[in-house]
Length: 441
Image (tube, rainbow, N blue to C red; front, side):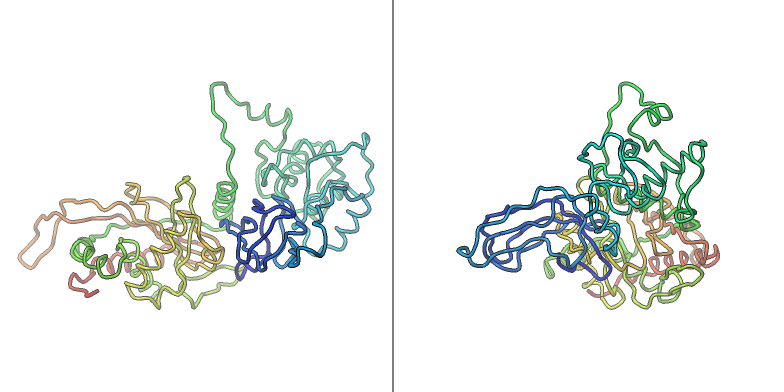
């Protein structure tokens, strides 16, 4: 499994494009994998015959692990199939004890010291972390199989089993949770059982359509709810007169596209203004770790991008403060295009320090964006509309038709007070309004 980014430690196998015995060319795609948000292709690092596949689809594999073997001499040996024999319970126990990361391998559930009444096999797989919690809390196999999993392919996650335990504790079905897992029950139970409990608590009405969330939507949902639990969200609003910016773009967009081969949108212009403001308000380019404020020296701007399937991804423009407007345009277009075509590299979505979202693209006037953790602020721009506005001049007030836009900023009230957040927003508005119409490209 190749290195996929500075902070990425594992990936999920989505699909093998080659089977045991197939001929593989150098740099030919072997398999598709997924990290937190991005799906990627893994090319072969050598050519030959695919002799052995060491992991299955939907397995979660650590970076650097051997996932396949390719024989470069077709005459040496016969391809080896994946062993189908299931490991014994003792082998599983030994594997858990040896593992340094309990979340990386999926094996059949077998709690240590527990004998299943029926001793029956199960096709359902559980991670060692789930197995360890179940063993510690005395959850039997038959009981574990009733828990509805929210993970990939319906697998039971740590959250699912802790929510199940929380439900039993609150309803007096158990004596309590072991000290090892106290304090980890942060979410209310939401229909975590496959059986009667979820049906009784959350009856499904007739004449409805039920749609399973895909993997990315589940990740987005978890990321957003986690952000609301983590940060004290406050949102401030302002209105900006972006007439100068609109007229400048209209004047230069055809010439720019002809010269650079790139279309210029409002996004790079907004990002340029954000960068200027961050330099004056560095605390908004920060993270909170326990009781410490970590102010980032790099300015890496994430831009929320809608995908064709309705999901959302946030590619990151690294060192945006070192790019001029032409560089920003090219980076914005490249990342947006790669996002929509499924060509983003996992590192393209990492290390963001501040996020921008243009909800005006879809006609919205304003919104209350959710902070992209572990950042502390996010700016949203609404749709640009022509409005009659009172203009103050030396000759007195007058009414003029101007291009107006609402902007909003959500910020983490743990470290950013209303005054600071509002001053940053005011600086952003003034930067947009002062956009020079004669700025050369």
